[in-house]
Amino acid sequence: MSAPAAPAAPAAAAATTSTAATMAPTVTPTRNLTTVSGHITSASGTMFSIPHGIGFKQFDGTDWNMWSRTFMAILGIHKAQDVLCFNVAPTGVDADEWGTVAHCVQMLLQLYIHPNLFSVVNNDTLYPTVHNKWVRLGTIHGGESGSTVVFNQWTILVDSRLDDTQPLAPQFAKLNEARINLANVTMGITDNQYALILLCALPASFEALQSILLASGPAGTLSAENIVVCVMNSLFPKQ
Image (cartoon, rainbow, N blue to C red; front, side, top):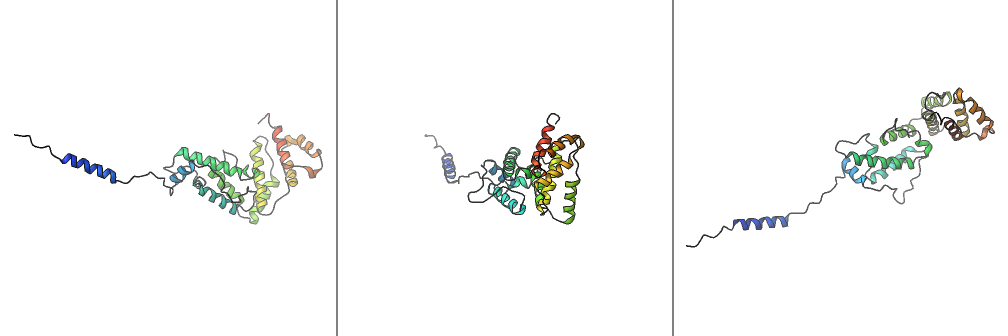
């Protein structure tokens, strides 16, 4: 008596499995570019650049609203705009990718804002993130121009006296910020006038340097930048 034939079910099952595998669609992982996490992941592998044909100039203190909108649009092309909207990486965003994108955006911001204007926020203690810097720049250059604001800025500028017991660089930056704010509301002063204000603001310990600078030539040749450089150089051994 011959042995019974082996059941054919396994072979059929194998054929079914093979057919299903052949018919199953191939799934390609994609980035979700509609979320902050997707934006940052995409931007972290991007080489930032200004699109060809866009006449994007360095910000010189005028028309912040237009300039900032253009800058934000350029970041949007690279999916990097979120670092200016959030102070820290939102939940679900890779911290290393966020840091990479934030660093690139800050470097781009620093390149396209005049050094004198960027110096106001170039302090990582007061403005530790690029978001902090962006918000502060917007407050300075896109603010209101009421009489009270103008009066307050003039008071800061002409009544300030530098304190030589504290670091002078942040104090110079504050005076420069007041000057910029006045310029933004068409109340600007010349470099020569600003130089005289800086000389007047120097503490008594700089009286000798003050005399040397005043005697160095006609008052009309005084330069605010030169005064700041001379003061900071004289402090080099102490600060």
